[in-house]
Amino acid sequence: MGAGAAGGARPEVSSRVLTVPNAISFARLLLVPVFAVLIVAEEDLWALVLLAVSGASDWLDGVLARRLNQTSRLGQVLDPAADRLYIFVTLLGLAWREIVPVWLVLVIVVRDVMLLCVLPALTRRGYGPLAVTFVGKAATFALLYAFPLLLLAEVPGWLGAAAAVVGWAFAWWGVGLYWVAGVQYVRQARALARAEPVRGRLGSDDTGSLPQGGADA
Image 1: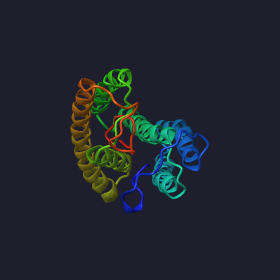
Image 2 (image 1 turned 120 degrees about the vertical axis):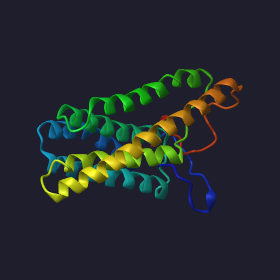
Image 3 (image 1 turned 90 degrees about the horizontal axis):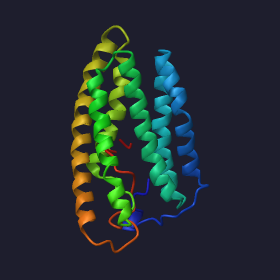
Image 4 (image 1 turned 90 degrees about the vertical axis):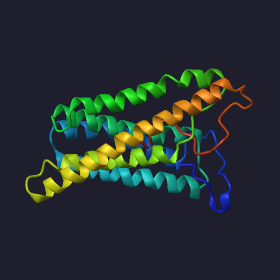
């Protein structure tokens, strides 16, 4: 959400709450508990369907935000938050079913906790959420593809074997990029914290989001 409009112009970021993109993001958040139940109940087919719907709606709310000129600060928070929740819930579910090791959960959670620790320093200086970087978007993209594939890897036969190989490839790339993006955000936050704030929010990019690897991570 919030990508530049045609011709390089930045979309206006409003404080509106009741917008079509925000409604879609809210719906994605409400489906997170449903997705968690499906994973725990080993209803893998329905879990994959829900993930596909969530991914499509993630793309749709960004398109609508630009075309309807409904980019909002709330949407810039809700969208990556939904991505992160789906990643976290999928990770926990796969770890609980022993499909992925617990250390993979810890590696991702520790990175997010690290970024949360820098938020107070930015907030005290009047800066808003940091803009999503290309590396962060790529990391979220990779992880959101990795975990459904690892879930699909439970299917017996050649399909499961192929999904396992591709899924772990996405997972390793995703985790690596997730941490690279995390280091970038920490460095950017440190630079902002040392500088005297001149604006109430970060003005380098109107695509601002919670510090993240993507959701999107």
